[in-house]
Length: 175
Image 1 (cartoon, rainbow, N blue to C red):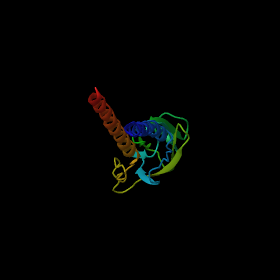
Image 2: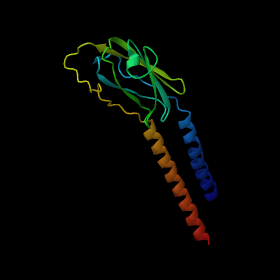
Image 3: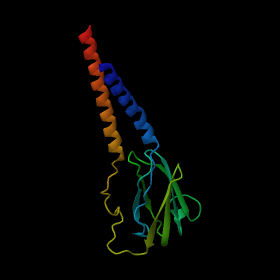
Image 4: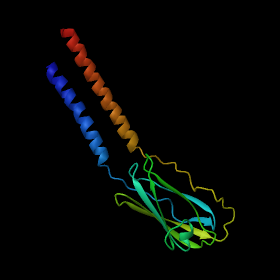
């Protein structure tokens, strides 16, 4: 009976260790864009954070609009950059709009898997009481998927340790 219990416990731990990483690797990611319509002075700085990408994914961010090429050297009316999302799947870009910025700018973020989200920036000649370094609203949300997988891994490691200690204890008792 003990051998059956030990075999079942070992099989359960092995299944958890094999299935856990595979499920995490196949997780679907649904990126989220920051709220559209940031209003920034011409020659102002804005930071946009796109969330929900796969961790460490390459994310291409493109900004289109009048004189967007002056944001940084790029093709006419377009600025494109590539960044890597952080461990939580956030891709952040900080840009300074050109002094000649006007109208709306579309901001598109696409990861290496084809997941795409869109936001926008409105450039105003004068925006009263606008802090050029403001980053918008604070991100108070949480993505608990990483914490879930970490906790599951710790649980699997603990179960493996308990099973191993029981096997060693029994082997010593029989010797």
